[in-house]
Length: 254
Ligand code: PEP
Image 1 (cartoon, helix red, strand yellow):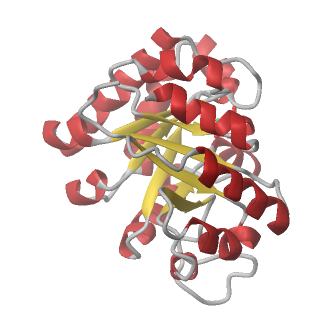
Image 2 (cartoon, helix red, strand yellow; image 1 turned 120 degrees about the horizontal axis):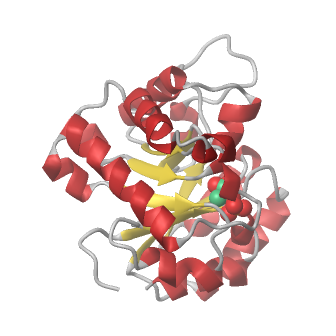
């Protein structure tokens, strides 16, 4: 598949996998994906497995991501993890504003933008998630929601920082539901997001920024989704928990 932007496919393991299971999964991925150079490949294990998985991915094409981080650098914030702590394990990416955190931890755009700025300050690349709920889509509010989330979550970033930021479009109704957006629904939302990025950061940045699709991506639908002009990769939940299915998504996307 020939695109100006290199595809980036990330696996979000969420609150799954012990350390031993994480190591076993990444060992299998290293074998399955040994010869892939065309795609940026990222795994995001739980915090507890970052240390061991970081040793496994050394000298492989797989990069390490975290699922969240604090907007603070250190101090009395019980249960939080700072960007600098992630850097100790060679983490390169961090998922921010996932819809599960927006929903269950009540994270809002202002906090997410602070986290994005803190990530950049530590040279981590944020994967900033946006996406509408089913009620919002059915109420004709998709564009309004995406506009608010894109403007709010990326507030304060410089164009240079935006260049190093990935956006994940994840319609909430497609996450973990087995219900995938159609290719035209995905393309339409991605093109709209790119237009928003153009308005904020200019055309050159918008042309370079990578926008992942997330929501029940599987080996069977990856190729069609990735073939859309504004879809530059995937953020994969359930199907990233199995080496074969995650590898097949990557291989089918090339
Ligand atoms: C996600 O949680 O980011 C996700 C897209 O999950 P799933 O692939 O399971 O729908």
